[in-house]
Structures are given as C-alpha cells and as structure tokens.
Image (cartoon, rainbow, N blue to C red; front, side):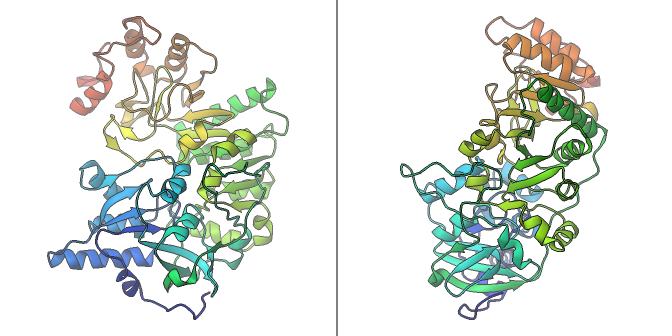
Length: 500
C-alpha cells in the first residue's frame, strides 16, 4: 500500500536520484527483504554511463547478504566501489579478491552504531523494501528488518519499494526499536526470546521520502540442497553432544535458546534436533529463520523464534501467509543490533552453532578466507554470538574438494574466532569438547576426533616435531598445507602425500 502524498516513480526515475560516488543503503538481510527494482535500474544506468565513458560506481551498505537483483546485478555492471558489512555474490567476490572493490568485513551487530557515529560517512540515499508507507512517515518493513531502521533514520533521501507480494500482517511480527547512543543506554529489556520492546514500524521524516516504486516480486531465496552424508553425520554428533550436556545437567530441563547459522549444515542440524524425541521443545534467538524451521514450529518442537529475517523460499513464505495467526504469535522480527546483541545473547544463555572453513589444532576458527587470502562471504553474525554464547559450537565437514582440503590444520590461515571463544568443534568425524582443556589436550582432541583420517598422521607428526611452548608450532611449516593446496591443488602436495 502507499499514500498519494508521495510521488510514484519508475525504477529508472528512482535511479536518477543516485549519483556517482554516493553511499546507498539498501534493505535486505540475506535475500529476505532486499531491494530489487531500484538496484537493477542502477545497474542499467551504470552500464549506459560506462558505455559513454562516464564513471558510475557507488558505495553499498546492506544489513547482510542480498539477492541476485542487488549485489550480483550491480557487481556485474561494475557499479560497486565499496561494500559493507557482508555479501555472498560470486561476481562481487571476484571483484573484491581482485582488488577492484573495497570490502569492509565486520560484525553485523556493530553496523548500526558505526553508522550512527559517522564512521562510514553520510548515507546519501536509502532504498528500502516495505509493505506500506503512511502519509505521516510510518514505514512497515518487509520480510527482514536488518539495519533498515538505522538506514531510514540517517539517510538524506529515502526511496521506498512497496512490494505487493508482502502480507500486511508481517507488521505483527515486527518489533522495531533503536538503541540510544552510549553512554545513555539502559539494559535491553529482553528476558525471553519472544519479548517485545518496540513498535511495528519505523517512523521517518516524510520530507525525506522522494518517492515510491511499486513492485510485485518474491524474495530471491534459493532452495538449499538436501543434506549430504557429511552434514547428516555432523547433525548426529551435534544432537549427541547436546543430549550429553542435558544428561550432565549443564543444559536446564527447559533447554536453552539456539542460534544457528545459514546453510545446509545448519538446516541438517535443526532437522536432527526436531527428529530426536529426547530434545525438549525449544526457542531460537538467532538472526535468520530458514526453510527447515516452519515444520519444527508446526510440530511443536520449536516454541518460537526471535530473528531479523525470514529467509525462506517463496513457496514456504506463501504457506506461512496462509496461517499468519499461528506464526505472528511465535516469530519476532527485530533490528540486527537487537537480534545479534551480545548482552541479550549472554543473558538468555544462547547456544550458538555456526560453520567454519577451517579450525586449527588449538581451536582458532576461520570463517571467511580460503588459504588466508581469498574472501568468501564475511564473518556475518557468527562473532556476535560466538563470543557471548552459553557455549559456542563450530561445525564443518572434515575435508572439502574431494579430500584435497583439510578443515583441521596446524594453524588457521586467517583467524575470525580465537581459541578463547571456540568451545566445541564438530565435524563428520566426531566431537572435540575444548572447554577447560590445555593447548596440548585441545590439539589431541581435534586431531583424533575431528580431523579426517587422511590427515591425522600429518597433524600428529607436525605436533610431535613442533618447538615446545605454551602453543607448539613449527613456524616454517605452519602453513605448509595451505601452500601445498595453492601450488599443487592438494594440501598433502603432489600425489596427495607428504610428512611434517
């Protein structure tokens, strides 16, 4: 819906409000709620200007990753000069790793405060998807909240994409609040995952809204592949670990809220929890609500979820729309500075479950860079939860690329989560509970329980021949596996075998 106070713009007319070099903030946390029509028009504008020899590149902000119509389309048009705080576009990734686009990788909960204090400069234009905007400036957001409230507050100009596919009762899930600046903050009064502390809309100065673009497009959420054997084994070990913690009395009988990352491993773990009768009904306090979760809610296994995005396929979202009375009382959509807030995570005792590219023998985890140099997507919200979780779990297959890459390495080629934050590591080989363990004990657990058998002898030899210290390393060989992969396509070198 829209109010005739604001002009109706075509996407091209909206794109005319954006100039070369400007900072543009787009809605979207994953493809959920991402702007669609205006970024495509900006890509067309960029191509036309480039063909005439004129420059057109913009700085792009979002809540997290986005859909194809935003990052991928703009990157293909070579229209992005700078990007923050997270992305998952293959075209943009290539430009970032080639040094053609600057990228700032950061914790997602930090973004609103950094913007509010001007660390990134001014937001010239905000392009935000919504279900409705009223004449007095109330903006009812889409399938994600993300950082859109902050973008709307700070932007000099606002363009609203009003999407006709959005159910008007999405506002019943929204709980919008904005933190005041420090040092004037009171404790956030969230004491239960479904507590609400705000209002269902963002209020902006109507004078900043330059126009409305009408769309009728579903979110560009792709279908996850069915869990492979490794993901299913990881899920089985994750359930085993949580059950053992319950039996030991370290998880209360009512269980604890869960946070789960994005992807097939996360979906497999959630499905595994749902299928196990010994796991009691639970809540989630997370940042992403994925396709595996509506069925858990309907079964009664998941009692409710706090999130900042509904990252589900259009078919799943349509099914949810058909029973909004059920879902609106069980899902809360918050801004990311609340969904990922460290104080709330610690207060609620959230159990975090995230994926890593690699983990070294002392428990440092790398979530972002292949062989220490090639950026994949970014740290996202994993650090927000890991550092403050009741206990933190990292999961990954023990090998990748048909065994050419080991996920357990002597030394992480890049560290996103250090040994002080990583408590439990699970691969398809088993579980390493690192809590209270010395470095030597951590190394033995990770090698024996989590490394693939193909790599265990190498890792044991590396440890045995390392120089003694609190942490034992062979500095000249710490990255030998990574060098082998770069040079020979296999971490164990030519023919897939070497020794430390």
